[in-house]
Figure 1 (tube, rainbow, N blue to C red):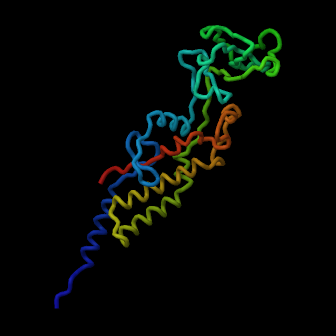
Figure 2 (figure 1 turned 30 degrees about the horizontal axis):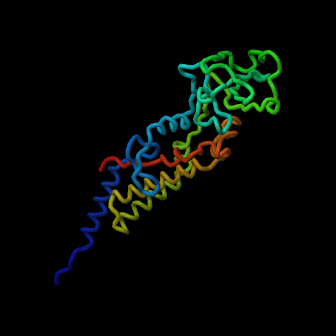
Figure 3 (figure 1 turned 90 degrees about the vertical axis):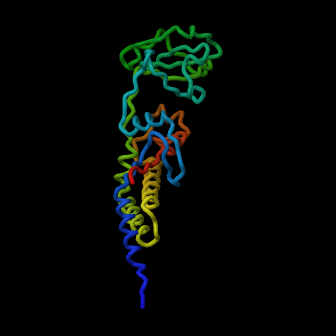
Length: 247
């Protein structure tokens, strides 16, 4: 009587796929090029997101280039624009020494290229002559606050997101191995499961406001998501992807 051996081939398959899985590297974060998202979909990361992600992950000091000051929007109509986009923009310094870019229907303002004050550090200089008019006196709109540099605090979401989810990722790896043994997964299917789980964990971590320092009052005032330090348009969160290398 001849007995068919179905066990040995299956064991050999399992060993081969586990060896392949061992040889794969899964990169999770903001990728430079084509990668996959939390559902395994193909994604191409915009180039500017790499810079934005690095600034938030490690912190940075942003300094003005080719101009005296950074113009930080403090009104909805100023978001995505510069002072040059507003005809008749003029400057007002507060009693505390802060410099604001403003417009008013009752003021023509200085020419666009005029007036680039360099003494913008608060507390070092007195306000200009006279008391700045109240908003309701001249219908003044405060559009920008000006600084020579801005400090962005470190808000790690990739490294910290990984550290906070080690148990979840360990379970994902166990499930990947079990999938190869019991469900006939191949190494690539197992690696995709781990990658998608990792992306989902980091996205969830980024989405949780309590994991980070709060937004500053200036940023918060013009934000669509004032209580979420790393969420504004969702581009950063949606750019978290994974890439499988090797095999």
